[in-house]
Image (cartoon, rainbow, N blue to C red; front, side, top):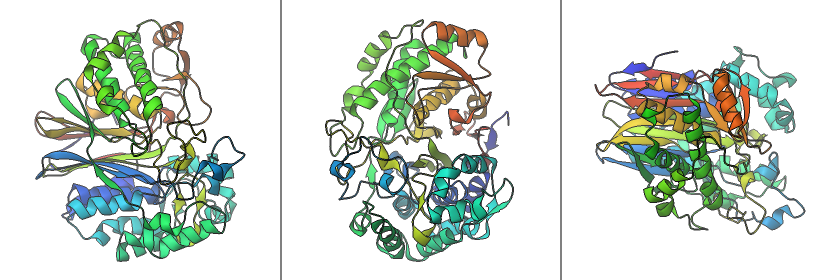
Length: 526
């Protein structure tokens, strides 16, 4: 798709066409953006299980037309009461997979309940109906889902409950064939009937914690029963007349604001798009924001994060002055998870939801909890076992989180909703998309389609590699390499760049939606 989808009343974007269609149906049935967003999120937890699940976390930015302000909901889980460094005695790091990687309570279902309870219009059970239907009756296996299943067969095969669902008969369900999740459908039906507390205090919670208890897991019934998410004030900045909103810590969202603050003095509209200088300025601005992110980001209940100073434009100006157009700066890159799904909804009243959800690595821990069909996240494996590290493991603590849905307003109303999956790549891709729309006048689809870059590694071995999509001109790649970047060309449209989506309200009041050709997504305008 080369042009944005246009909607005169509403817009839904997500990384899976079935989830997008479910959100559009909810709007057509009289639901608002919040109903549709929960429906999309629940569907993604069914049709995109390599990226997200009921066993993961989510973050939500919301705007209700009657309130006239942006709010955030932090639906990320905390570590269990038994989770401490001593629980991993003899190890230098928390395992990335298996029961040992399951450290934090899933916040996803609590997020659905909070958003729906606060702003939803349709009955709770109605917004879960599409997800229940896809779990029970099945859906065609997508290319991305199949490729990720094959790539992670060894991980999925380690746990019988996981293998039974994702490798029936010992093999991945092929692209286009029907994929069913009967156990997950039953869990979703219980949630539809009994509500949020079914997941945290009911039969589902008991089955998950009993399963983990028999395998020396860290999470207990008390951890689930005591879980709560939080309505929070977003982190705020500005760029060329737009007010920028991101989730506050424990999200890395402030890094996205910092990068734009650092870029603002350079007046990108005077820099040729796609040139050496464009990539150099963006990459170096982001690396500077990553330095502070890595230094400070953790659960603010445990360690203060100096947001006021980090988001001060005077500080940004000092950082901007340190950028050299022909020299790459050096810094360490830590592996960050990439299995995430971003989506957004705007309705006819102007209600807007920008949200993102994740399991951390593809298929998370690789562990489905008993007969629930719920794949549990490994997000807590990002905690450090170094007691001096700002993100060290402690009981009832939230970890450094890569998830960062974004929203930008003009004259107090949402103008751009944007985000992507991709760990370290999230603030990078957000910066690319936003500057392309604001500085270069591109529509959302064009901004998403243009060649992208990602510095560092989304997850795996740490690296300072600068990956460029194959469509970036060779002369630009060569000049960036001469500046000191470790350049590597990847595919023309490469999944490592993330799966980005965006909604823009244009000067005529229409909604333009863009969906990433690097995934199975779709934009629908109404």
